[in-house]
Amino acid sequence: MPVGVKSTSTQPVKRFSRFHWDSPWRISTSCFIFTFYNLLMDFLTNTNNLLLLATLLTSGLALALPQILGRLNKQLLSVHESVQWINQRQAQIVDIRTPDEYKAGHIANSKHLPLSELDSGLKQAKIDSNKPIILVCLSGTRANTALGKLKKAGCKEVACMDGGISAWNQAGMPLIK
Image (cartoon, rainbow, N blue to C red):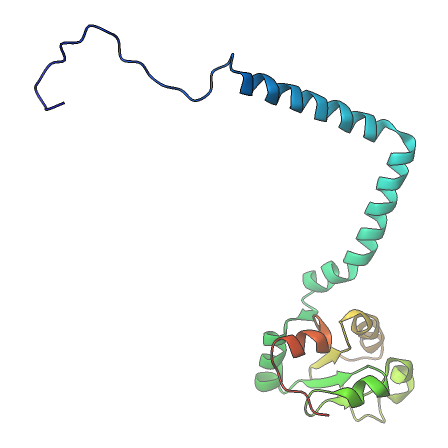
C-alpha cells in the first residue's frame, strides 16, 4: 500500500503465528519431552545402569587423561609445532618404536631408541638432555610413557608428538625408509 493512503478495510489485521499454545505440535512436543524425561530417570535410577555408566566414564577418563594432561602441561606437540621445534630450537627427535616399525619409515635425523631400551640406552644414543627432545611413536601412546622416564632421567624439555608417526604421515611429511 502506498505511503499516506489509508486502508478502507474494517477487518483487523491477522498476525500469523506458526505455533500456538494449543497447537498439536506443542502437545506432541510436550509429550515427547515428558516421556523422554521419564525414560531417562528410569535408566539412571536402575543400579545396573549406574554401574555401567560409572564403568564407561571411568574407562573413558582413563583413556583420555594422558592426552588431557599432556595438553595442559604443553607436552603434546602437533606435527606443525614439532617442525617448528626442530627448525627453530634444534630439537632432537627420539623414535621409541620397535626396530621393525622404525625400519618401515622414520623421520630424518631421528635417533632410534626403543621404549624397552630407554632406561639403559639414553647415553648410548647420544641424546643431549639439555636440548629439547621430541618423542615419537606410532600413535603417541607409548611416547607419553617414555616422557615420564626421560623427565626422571634429568631431561629438561621433553614433549611428545601428538598422533606420532601416523599424524606425521597424514600431514604429508617425509619419511625415510
